Image (cartoon, rainbow, N blue to C red; front, side, top):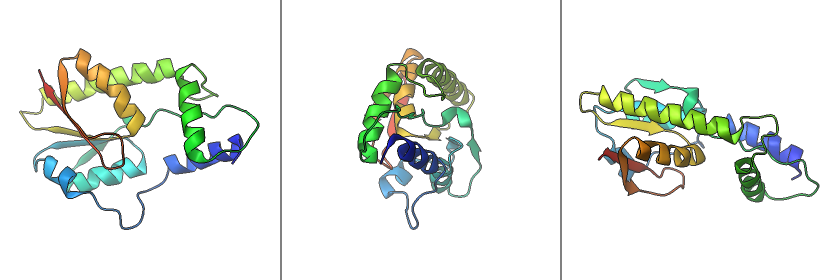
Length: 169
């Protein structure tokens, strides 16, 4: 696909739901306590994931946790989406915004999101705080949480349904 096709494909993906029949893996479900506070981005996949994790409990959705954008460069050529993903992410990290959120603004958003997570944890009465969000934005949260005294004690990677666990140092 060309860059225009990729942009349309990515925009559609960002608004898509989980695939029909997808279920949350037991390892992830078992990692979430029954009294956990559940948060998610405002994207349908994250909302649905949070619904699985919450098992019918209230879930708070916030666009602050949405994925960082992937604006493709306007370049000639055709590539598979995974290759566009890599190029778009690299160039975005170097400052190409293509009319979307700039990397510096996404970093500010990640700082605010980390602050919200920390405040939620501080006022949780000891309950776990669980966030259903997206791969790259989750990566952006990692250094922000570390700066606020939280350590990553389980890193499950970046694949679908993977998860990380943080604890206050």
